[in-house]
Length: 292
Ligand code: GRG
Image 1: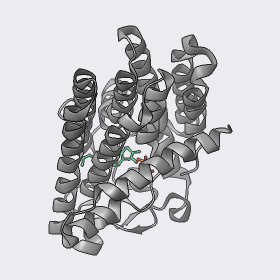
Image 2: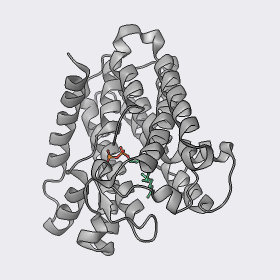
Image 3: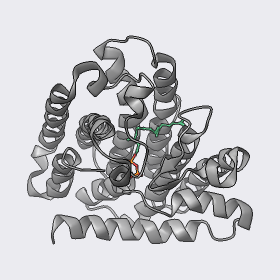
Image 4: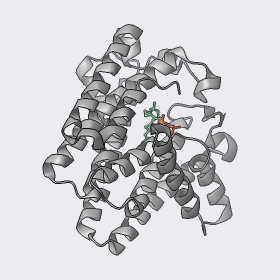
């Protein structure tokens, strides 16, 4: 099967399961949650989770609730990040941001709803799982990626460092937490669910960390070089807001080189798996070639 077909297969499993996960929620809340969860998005993190589970011969259908959960957490983070009190953005995935359509109060609540639904989904699956210990460990990996030592912490560092001069180590810390932790959390959770041993988990975690760096630098490059039409969000915000990124600190050429190096390191992390890791290795290389 071609790379694009494999990606599409994982993605369509996720898209269907996400739509089903909102059934039964009261209409006002469902509309605001569904607006940001069900329309657009690359589904990068859930695809990584499913592919990492597949690498070890795990049951992709049993991993699906965890894949949906990580996408819900991602969607919540985007809604909250776009709020006037944070990035104050009007455009996301080619449409007005959540608070622009539903108001700030509903946007905060839609994010809260998505975050709690993610954990409800994983907890229910853990109770029903044939290996509840594995499921609980996967849930913990996702919680770590999302929370106080992951994305939330990175967002705090990012906000607090904006407009101030920082060094490369702090920049890497911000990126590692804000973006990398959810990406490596997805890979690690997938590996755990698939039955990876401790060394194999470490390899997937390493892969995810390098991939996270490559993904974030490419995001910064696109912010500086692409149009709103292609990106579906407002470009040029990093420079305008005096954000610290690889591009604003080192320039485009250096940022490109760094992104490529990180993608290659992600690729190398999975070499011991041979051809079985083809899809994940190609994902690393494509990450730095993507245009949105
Ligand atoms: C509000 C706790 C909290 C965190 C927000 C996600 C985030 C942290 C900020 C969004 C801004 C940003 C550039 C974050 C870095 C991660 C990133 C590149 C997010 C965009 O992810 P994609 O490209 O988005 O996977 P799609 O739309 O494809 O799902």
